[in-house]
Length: 543
Image (cartoon, rainbow, N blue to C red; front, side, top):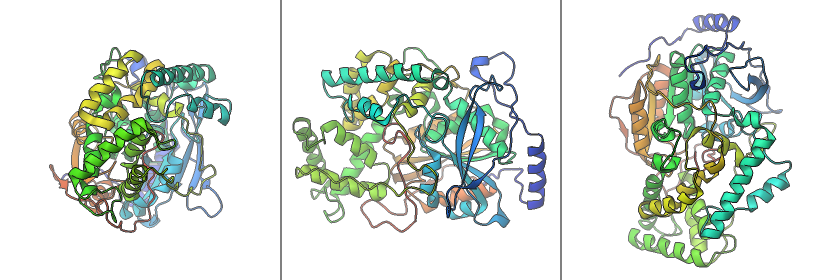
């Protein structure tokens, strides 16, 4: 089993190394595609993070860090990043800091890391401070907000159909709403709009790494957090200590193979989310039908009968919504509900059964707010849209979407329709001037660990295999499980490999597959203490 070289285990040696690093630390940003062939990115001084308890009685510390809006102009406008930390629970054996990105794009880490803290392996919580942040443009950081009031934002949101458009009238309303949103955002803060790219966030992450005093980065990213990881690893390859990529995006699919012009497919159809989503829906119906209604309320007694029941429900909802539960809104709820097995799959089965019987489903209770100053920041649709659409090419012709939807539905059913429309907001969105298009294969100081799940409604196993191939030095770890990411759907096998890798640098043997999760669907979950929220600001849309 390969071992990462150069790990510092002595507390005294580590303290000396940190002191030397912080004393004269500057950002040495990686190459910016917009400045290819020009001068290197200017250096920016880095200061220590001034942590304080988030709120009285909280186990988490909070801070605000200023970073340049534009790294090519370090003396210009600055923006703020909201940061949260949970200190290592065994400080005497502390290794350093593990940075966490919860996905999205648009996931506010200051909210989702505390909510999911117990999902990290115990050994990792003991040995690392776990730090997350709201990326630029998101949540409690300097955020994209293209409306003057919550009422105005709600009015805009109500101007388009829930889920995705069905029929010409709804398609027209959808594209009109997104054209209006792009106009509002360009008027509201055009500077910020053009500097919320993943490469900007990767540079922010390197500043945060230096600010906590780590010579190299230790990181765990899920979903969108994997493309952030790949970008960081190729902008700062010598700064990689250990990086776990869980629920991967294929970097070539993300960038349209490096070409900005005339993408034939949307980001998530290129990624294969439609096919992976369809396979996960089918797995849900098969497992539901194979058990009793006591365990899965929507079961019709067999997998085949349950699939038939599902098809008939979808057909019925097209003509006869149940309250606000239209066909498209229900599909959106299905895809979101598949992300986290416990309690998501059981709750989803209950909602489908309610709709089958003509009842309006009761909303699922939200997770309890974490003990931070603002646990419910504004996370409007413009926030994930500004990152996704600025980075990843999508069709600019509204007239293409109907044909794309029908093509995706032919192979992916409801999941195909859902994922086709996930990037409709990109039709009028400006590309970021600093998007990263590769290469993805720069040799890194240490190898990366890539995790892929067999039945993921968002990120297919094929994307994990592609990520492992594209990176300069990576090891693929497979999971034969269900749900979006192994972090949110725990497997003791995955956790053991993650812990060995993050703590000691030991990679799993090539070809390793973890065969099961701790608690299969429609069984009683084992207590874990974690609360999973489902992938960030675009849960069910990107994440």
